[in-house]
Image (cartoon, rainbow, N blue to C red; front, side):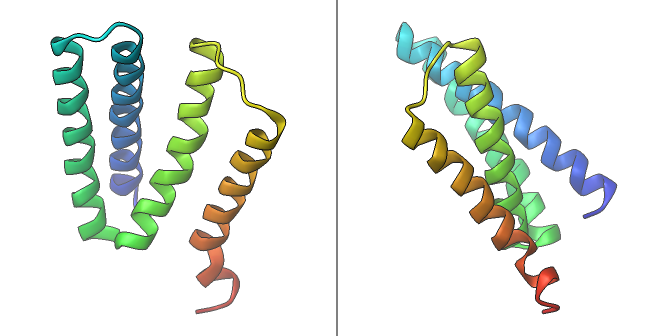
Length: 112
């Protein structure tokens, strides 16, 4: 992935994290303004992802985005919002990260 692609991936991640944070804020205290901001942020993140899909393909773009968001959203939920994961849920998160890594890196590891 090029520097441009990495920057776009980083930007989409930041936008999706802001959207997820706003969604949690809306869940804690619903309001039309929070809902509107959440929808705008998710829409912007998806527009950035469309550009990444065009440049780098669907599998690579969404797999990388998914694992980065999985880790980042869980960090925000655990650290900022004080949420807790049960041990089995923690194992699930780790397995999801491994799964996405294998999907993303699989072709390079098998020379395909």
